[in-house]
Length: 452
Ligand SMILES: Cc1cc2nc3c(=O)[nH]c(=O)nc-3n(C[C@H](O)[C@H](O)[C@H](O)COP(=O)(O)OP(=O)(O)OC[C@H]3O[C@@H](n4cnc5c(N)ncnc54)[C@H](O)[C@@H]3O)c2cc1C
Image (tube, rainbow, N blue to C red; front, top):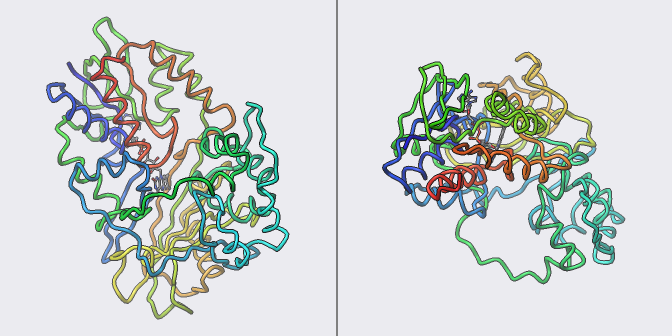
């Protein structure tokens, strides 16, 4: 039995890891088009700085991430607890995010009342969420429609949209609440109101694990560890150029040669997988092509601590769409994580790009100028950066637009009819790293169970 995994991001590496764990006799070959493993996880050491080119942490409460980390015997790193504040930039000023957000929903109304982020009317509207009748019909809503209907325009614009935008890089007025926040839709139906539902939920166990975790050497440590333990034949600079169905399985053409396989796990973005399956399943290809992606750029800047007008006591801030900016967030990496910068310096990263705006096409000078303008406006730093790096992520975050769940259902059904073909990756039902690990594990499990 021979399985070929296409793509060496976290989904592909997780698939390889679990496949060898469940079925040590299966021969596994992983083909990665670029010169390195990790895909959208990239950590670089530059001088004394630890620079995250994209993801800087993952959610510990989604079990697949921590399960893998524990299996690999890795030590996690939590954020620096004493700097716990996060801010929202509104009308050009930073406002502390109120305590007591459950998921993205403000459940501590006292904290919300004391927050400068919402007006008294805005808070009152959130309070009245309890009285808003639940919507019982099955038609899909966007996140914007759902949150505005339940909690009002202000809570949506100032609080929930910016937090959500930082994760999906997307437009909440286009994204499906059913695809992204299905538990909230279910809670509305069950309890009649989100606030009532959260009130009556059993208290979460007092977990020792911090909610967002990384590693002492950044997210790249996970990729490094996986690549040393995964017992697979790994080829870099090996783009798969075509996939052909043959009576015995598949024939894979790549820059490093041709391979035969019984199973394929394609972990490439939907639009790449669409091209690969197109010769033998046009319908599947068309469905995959329907999934839009947004682009992002991360500009990382370092400054001397002496250049700061005041200390950066917090993890950073997010920027609502209504501010009309192309910048989405600014993370104070060296205040958020230990050992990201030498003691006399600070490291900040500016996240640019909203759905529909391809910031990756901007020249370096423009991206750096936008990032410097942001740190000037946001935290008052006007000094020359001592380090500046740019990471561009073109078409990198799948957008779960209206109809996503039905589309994914059709993709899964169609793929299941192509014996030996498994699809996995962030376009299914979760873009976060734990979701991708789960997708990889599930693909491996299907092969072992003979499910496709
Ligand atoms: C800017 C940014 C910030 C993010 N921040 C976070 C965060 O903080 N926390 C979090 O949980 N998630 C975050 N995410 C999301 C998360 O990083 C990704 O969803 C996840 O890493 C995707 O992993 P993947 O393996 O599915 O896909 P990829 O990482 O895209 O891997 C696919 C691989 O396939 C390769 N490939 C493409 N075409 C071919 C081909 N023809 N042949 C062979 N190989 C091919 C690519 O080179 C790539 O290595 C972020 C994403 C971005 C873009």
